[in-house]
Length: 414
Image (cartoon, rainbow, N blue to C red; front, side, top):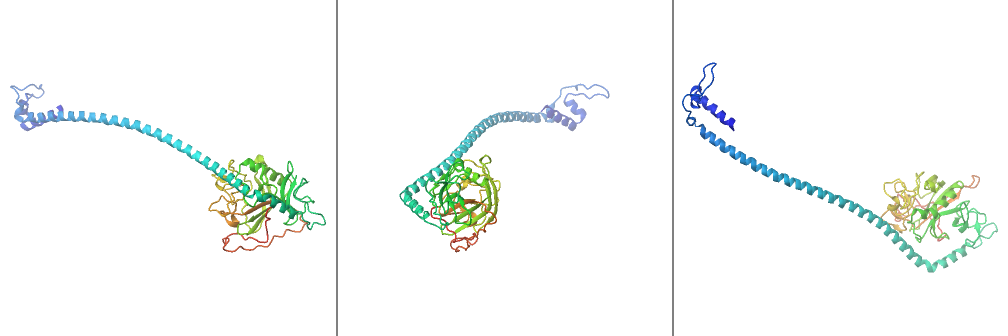
């Protein structure tokens, strides 16, 4: 501010002349080389009107000081509010983090609850079906045994009845002359009852998976699939991964998959070579070659794939395919087949049913499924002749589906 006053004073000096202005302000003109001294007489600053300018400038200075003080006070208040806001943001962030963690925990609990609920529902369904069929089961079993015990074309030897305490070496035992449920040792650790099938060419098939009425729940954990479960006397069952490995590791075996839908279309897929690895390797597919048959190849391209269940996810997908498909299987990207899926009776609207994609598609749950293995026969034996194949009516299956055959029939019980 003093600088401004001085500038104005200098301006006044320039206006009235150097000598006169110097006299007005009490400054004596100096001689060249001499000192500057006060002018004789008193100075009269009012004659240039500068006192009015100085007065106004002082007022401006006062107002500026007031404004600065006011701004400083407001800045302090704003700074205080900002500090409070920072504290509030930190508090909100903490609560958001807690809420997110709680939400993730709730989602995990809901997923677990959904799986448990699905298991309970299937157990209830299995109990209901068993209760409904309990009255007729004895009658049906006796009828089947009566049919299987009849004399057949076996070179004069009477057929061996499936039931009883007789133990056979395998389904290839020469004493077994017709299809049925037999107690065999094969490559098992102890005698086990299995279905033996003799209808399809030379040699006998051992049934490793049988599904025909939904009476057995197949949505089970890994240990159940390892040991085997179900009604081994001719009902729905899974032979067990350990037994399947022992059989296929004892020689060269082929695989025969027999399928039937609810429109009575029957089809099959045959693989000339089939084997699975041991439990220490999680039962991978080690052999699967030589596909043939009208059902389509929905089991190919899975060499090395491990067996998965809902409680042991070993598939090649980011998701748990056993949970997604409600089954247990050799899944790749949740698979082209799901023969251990739910028993849902026809079009299900999802991929959770017992399906073979190239036969009726992933959304169709089949009526019957039978997986059988047989020791490969010597090449000197007559070749196996496939049954004739016919196209199903267009109203029963899309035109893109694999052809099926009515000539192959699946037994009602064994």
